[in-house]
Image (cartoon, rainbow, N blue to C red; front, side):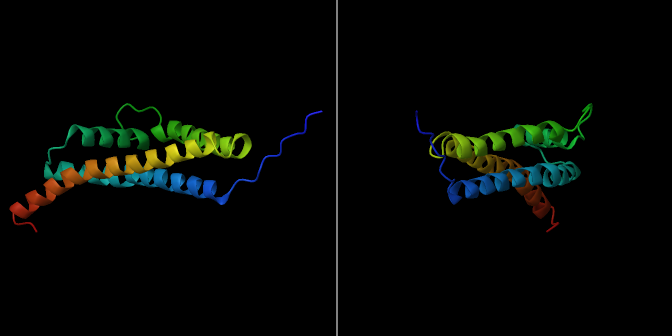
Length: 142
C-alpha cells in the first residue's frame, strides 16, 4: 500500500504574493474607474490631443464602468468573476497542487502583469496631462 503524500503548509511568501497581486490590480481598478473618467473630462475641457493608447484606455474605462454608449452591462460584471477565477486558481494551485511550481508562477505572473498595467495606464494618462499643463502654462494660466 502506497503511503499518502502530505501537503506541506504554504509558506507566508505566497500570501504576500496574493496581497501584492490584489493590491496592484486594485490600483488598476481605482485608476480605471475613478481617475480615468475625471481625466477624460479635463482633457475634453482643454481640447488636448490624445494618443491612441490613451483613447483606448479611456474607452476601456468607460466600458468597465458601464458608461460607454450602447453598453448593456458594465464590464466590471464580466471582469470581476474572471479576476476571481484567476486569483482562485493561482492560490489553489499553490496550496493544493505544488507549492514550488505552478501556483507561485501564476501568482508572479498576476503580480507583474498588474504592475505593468498600472505603469501603462499611468503613463498613457501622464502624457496628455503634461500637454495640458504645458498649454495652461503657455496661456499664462499657471
